[in-house]
Length: 404
Image (cartoon, rainbow, N blue to C red; front, side):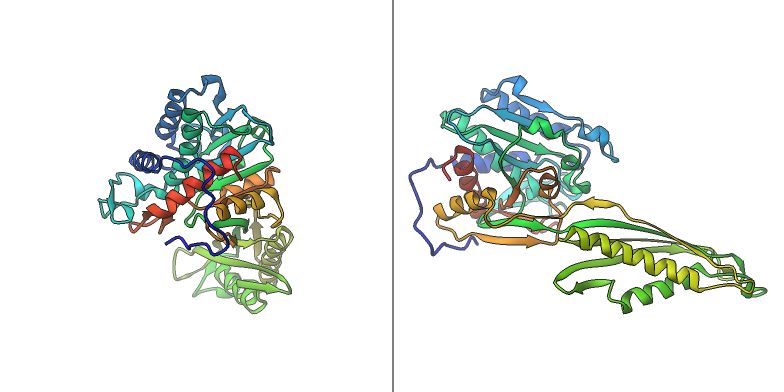
C-alpha cells in the first residue's frame, strides 16, 4: 500500500486526472504484445491516441535506435515534442514500451485492489505498460482539457528490458534539451530513484595447452586449473561477490563457465562470462581491472614440463553507465514537491538495478525515476497496485503541467 504522508495535507488546487480512464488505458496497453525488439504494435497504439487527441503528425517522430542496437528490432524510440502554453524550462516524461517475453498473452483482470493476469502462466506487463499509461494519460489530460503546461517532451523508449538499448542509442537532439526529466518504471509513487548502479560485462577466455591426461599430463596446461586458481585468488582478495573498498562498494559475479570435451584430455579452453557493478564509475572500472589482473596472473603461474604457460584474455565493456543525482537537483526537488503535494513523503533511493535513467543521465539529461504501481515484475505473480498507479498518475499530471 502507498504510505500516507505525515508532512502535509493534500493540495487540491491542481487538476485531478480521470483515474478510471487512466486505469482502462493501462489495461488496454497491457494486452498488446510487445517484447523487446517487437514494439511496433504498441508504438502505433500510442501514436494513434496522441494523433486523435490533436498532436500534429510532425510532432511525433521515431529515431533509428534499433538500427544501432546489437539486437536489431522493429522500431526505434517514439519521441513527441509539445510546445508550451506557459513559459518554463522543457520537461521530459518517459517510460519504456517493451515488456519481458513472459507477458505475451496476458489477460489483465481486476481482483480487489489489483490488476492481475487471468492466465496464471503469464506475467502482466505492468512493467512497464503502467509507466507508459502514466505518461500517456497525463498527455491526454492536458490535450483534451487544454490545461496550461510548459514545453514538454514525451519519450517512449524501446529495448529497455534487453539492455537499455533504446536510451543508449537515442537520437539525443530530438529530445529538445529538457532541463527536468522523469522516468516512470517501478512501484511506489512516493519513491524517487536518484542513483543507480552501472555495469560492465566480463568475457574471459582461458587458453591452456592440450595433452593426453593419462599418457602425458606434464605436457599440458589445464585451462580449468587456471580458472580454479584465478577464482580462488579473486575471492580471497575480496574482488568477487560483495565488494567493499573503503567508502567504495560494488559487486562482481562470474556466472557462466564452459570448457572441456573429454575426461582424458588436459583442457585447453575455458570460457567464463560474468559482470561487475558499482554506482561509482571509477570503481566499476577498477573492479574490471582487478579481475583482468588476477586471471592473467593465474595464467602465468602454471607451466608445463617445458615452461610453456597458458593465456588469459579478458574483455570488459560498459553495459550501462552509473549515475547519481544530487538531492538538490531540480528533477529531484520538483518531483519531491509534487509527491508532498499529494500527501506522501518522498523516499530518495539508490537502486542496484539498471534503468533507462542510467543512459539518460549519461547523455546529460538529469532524469529521476518514479513509481507507477508495478509489483513483482518479470514473474507470473506480477500485479498492478491500483492505488499506487492512481497516485503515479496524479504525480505525472502535476509534473507535466508545471503544478510542482
